[in-house]
Length: 320
Image 1 (cartoon, rainbow, N blue to C red):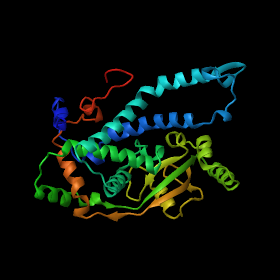
Image 2 (image 1 turned 90 degrees about the horizontal axis):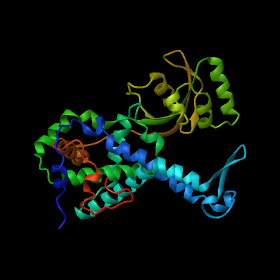
Image 3 (image 1 turned 180 degrees about the horizontal axis):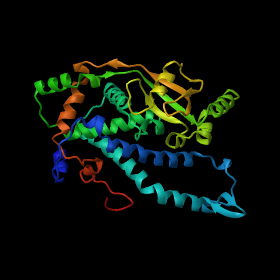
């Protein structure tokens, strides 16, 4: 018999109540997403056929770059990446496997509808520090949300709640489940009208929006992501309202004309995707609300690592 997941929970001493946890705190999912990028980077590197690189010799002495005649070998390259990403990447893989084992052990099911709901809520609640949507494609994001849902369901499976408390939460937070239409948007911000017209001409001549955003945009946080600012909607208060106004008039894959932003600078936006809004009924979100209320009774610092002993995890780096 496996031990009850509450065993792992009880080993954590400090308990702090949470409120609206999904919308206000997403540290576990964000961490998993960041770690997944390292894993994806490694995977792509290993997929590169040997014939597409210029070999110097077999094995680790393969030449991958030269700098003024000084050689950098494949072995040096991989060693540097392992030093930067190795531990975190392996931890991500282990945690994903642990959560899938937990789902099997405790008969946990995660539906596509539950994943859709969580992603819709995340799009609506996205803030300027959340780069989840910029760094993952749809399938990768769904995988991460699935892992998070498994964790939450395992942790809360034995928590009993009254139906009237769930209904009360829904009534008090009904607006959270009225999801507005959101627009996956990228932006280039420049100082003057002349700069904006120059950028727009380059785009019309075939320049790539993402590349140009990195080169020309004054908004450093989005420029580093190729201009991507995630999903925006008309109700957001953490973005310039002129951005939402500009993007609403576009079709998917369309680039706007330059427009004046609230601070006097000029913006050009690219609309990648439109996600239509909608309302969720009580039956749609009952399971979600139950988890929200149940999680309020649990410690704040619960992660997949709490289950490593239960599923006999060993790894290259020894004890976690």
